[in-house]
Length: 144
Image 1 (cartoon, rainbow, N blue to C red):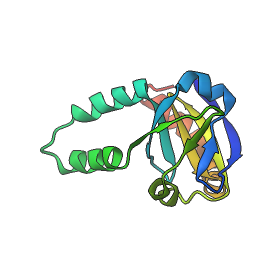
Image 2: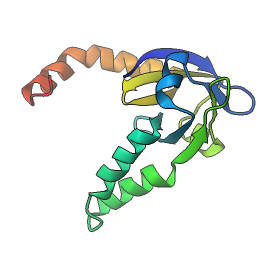
Image 3: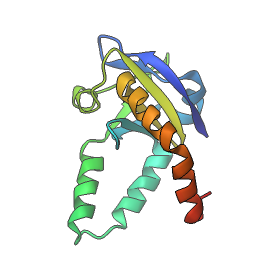
Image 4: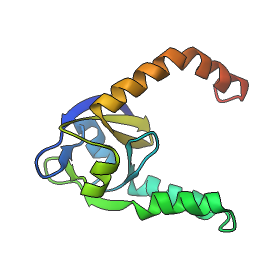
């Protein structure tokens, strides 16, 4: 399980280190894709295969499904984790998530998210204020 929050720097070559706790679980090749809420998603190859299967089960006749598949697959790249645990973030993904010098890398169970530090802090403040309400809503639909 991928959990925790870590602040890292992006170097001048667009490389960011994955937390040591994540490296052993993620392997040497991972998939980096545009995420939701202005972040990037990072998947193991095994998890990406599950995403692929789920998204390919959606109907091609529905415009929303086609659009979301294009968003996820069109922006996805396979990246290698180097010998010291860094990944190279392509310019188009770095720009999309507005990644600057400092980023926050968080574990979200089966995926990792990479956030602009300021964006993450602002997002987290909003969600923390809503946590009780969110938990109650999730409890009503049987998630919690």
